[in-house]
Length: 345
Image (cartoon, rainbow, N blue to C red; front, side, top):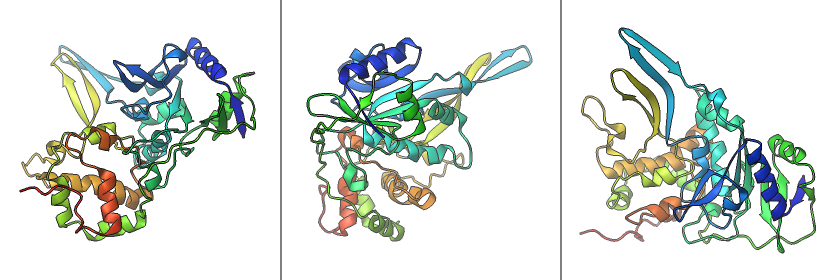
C-alpha cells in the first residue's frame, strides 16, 4: 500500500510521537557529525547525510548492562535488567543499507539462543526507511544485491518526491499500524515524480562466485597482501551495520558492580587469545581473512545470506585506506595478479 506524506506532516508525526513519550531516533548532528540519536524535536532530524555510525545501536548498544550485583556482608544480591522496561521507539530516516542489516542481525540474535535484550527492542521499534538520493565513491550497496531504494528491514519506506513530500510504502503490520494511528497525516499517493536516486558505481559482485573462491582459498597469498597495512583498530567493525561480535565482562568493585555486554571485533589481537596463551589468529592477515570469510562465506554457510550491505562506512573510516569492496571485486574477477594494494618493501 502506498501513501503520501508532506514534509510538514512528517514533522508533525514525529513531534506528536515525541510528546506522547515515544522514543524517536533519527539522524541528527552531534558536534558536526551526523549520528542516529534520540530527537527532542523533528527540527533536529538531518535527512541529507548518512550517519557516521549505523542504526544497529538502537537494538545493540555499544555497552549494555545485563545484570548488577551488590554485596552486604556475606550476602550477594543479584538484579537482572528487565528488557520489558525498554521504551517504544520509532527509528526514522534509516538508509536502506542500515535497514537491510537489521534482519541480518535478527538471524544471529534469535538463532540457538534468544537474546531478549535485542529482540525486545526489535519488538518495540518501528523502522521508517528513507531512499538515498546521493552516493559517494565508498557506497556499494548495489554490488551486494541491494539498492538505494531497497525496502528490506523497513516497516515504512519513504521516497522523496519532486516538489517536496514523500511517497510512503507500507512494508509491514507495524508500518500499517503507524499510518492508521496518524489520522489525517497520510494521504492517498500522488502522481508526483520521485527524485533521482543515488547510483553507486561499483559493479555487482557474483556473490556465489566469491563464496566459491573463499571455500577453496583459506590459505592464499591474497591475505598477506590485503592485511599488511591493517592495524587491527576495529573501527571497521564498530561502524558496520551488520557486525555483531560482543564480549561479556564483569565491571565493578567488591561491594557492587555490573555484568555488561560490550562490543568486540575479530580484528583485535585479544579476540581469539586463549587462556593458555595460544592465539589461533596470532597475525593480522589471519584476522583480516576472518573478516572477509565471515562476511562472504561463514555467515552465508549458516544463514544463507551475505553479512554486508555495502554502506561503505568501513572504507571511509579505515585509517590506512583498506577498501573491502575493492578486495571482493578482485576476488570476484579472479585477477589476483592485478594488484590493487601498494607494494610493501
